[in-house]
Image (cartoon, rainbow, N blue to C red; front, side, top):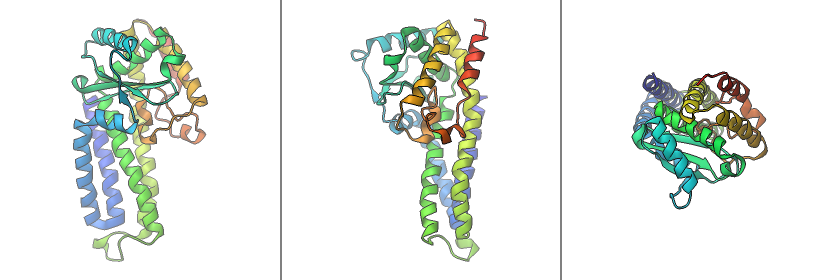
Length: 281
């Protein structure tokens, strides 16, 4: 099912890129953007972990530098029955975490610099178990491809908006491209459509990872308490992160921005906690 979701996601976002190309450059623009999408899908599949690490400015951490982190992830990986992922740290005071990689053999887990300052050991274990659940369920590829393509759509939309303002684009010949109005409209619509696609897929993934993570950790309490603390901290401590990568994190890092709540890729924390506390392990 998650493999199917990955292909559906790549297909939907590819269509958006092609439509953007057609609106601005006609059939030639559509073909150009189709080729761009194919290249991005290829690199998104094989280099999804590196893309996410780059987008979040995370850096690798050694066992000597973070012995407790390695010990926790090593033990939980054994319980989950997956290889131990590479570990990274994201330079942010906001406590948060994410997982990435196309499969368990090519996976990485990143935690922010602030996560150890606010969570106790049980809560850290709950968060890391949640991230390992994403890897075990083989759904981290979906999120990273979404981040890469949605980021490209947003970037290209910004370029199109400025190009349309200054009258750049195709002329009257339909083969040379669509109207300036059509291109400008697509430049505004496409990023919203990409975000909606991310929302629909990301929310179901979070519920599943919560449940699997609680089973890996052997308790729902650590993750439940951690989610409440992380959400509270996200409102108080901002994080500088590309919005296209925000849905990779266990808690929306942009939840402090009121406008972003309208397009949140994460289900409500209260609902996640309620589901966790209603589980029977």
